[in-house]
Length: 208
Image 1 (tube, rainbow, N blue to C red):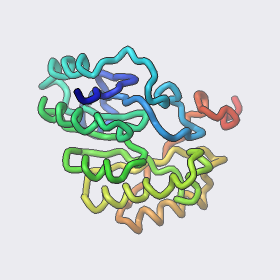
Image 2 (cartoon, helix red, strand yellow):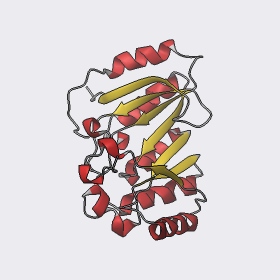
Image 3 (tube, helix red, strand yellow):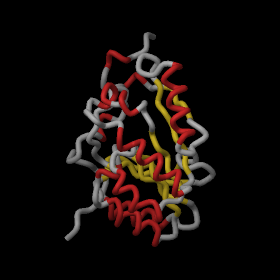
C-alpha cells in the first residue's frame, strides 16, 4: 500500500493563497531545510505526529465541490513527499484546480508535477551562492533557480516571492536577484516582510 500524504495543517477556506480563487490549503509535513526565518517550525520534522488524516480531508473536499475553486499544497515542503503526486491526482479528479507553494528543492519532482499544476508560488531566497547562510544546507541554492527556469519555460502561472529580512537580504542583493530572474524570463518578484516573531533563529527577531 502506498504511503498517504502526511498533513501537518489544514485551512478549509482562504481567498489569499491562490490569486483569484477560493481555496483550501493543505500544509504538508516535513522540510529538509531549516531556514533561519522560518515561522512554521512545527511543520519541519518529516514524521511528526499529526491530527490530520488525508482521507478525511479528501472527504471534506468532496463535500465542498461547487463551493471551492482550488486546493493549494503548502508546507513544509510539499515536494519532499512522494505521496504528493497521487494526492494532486485525487484532488484533480474531484474537479478542483491545484496550486503549489514550494521552495524549489526538488527540480525533477517538480518537472513531473508541472502538467498537473494550475498555479505555483515559488520561494526564491537569495542568489545561489547565498542560500546556505539562510537554509543551513550547503549547495542548496542550485535547485530553486533550476525550478524557476523550469516554471518559466513551461509558462506555468507563477508568483515568485522572497521573504526579506534586512540582515539577510540587502538592497544590492535584491537587485541581483531581480536581474537574475529577468534573465530566466520572470519579470516580477514579490517581496514579503519577514515575520520574525516565530523565527527559528530568534537572533533575527526585530526589536519591539
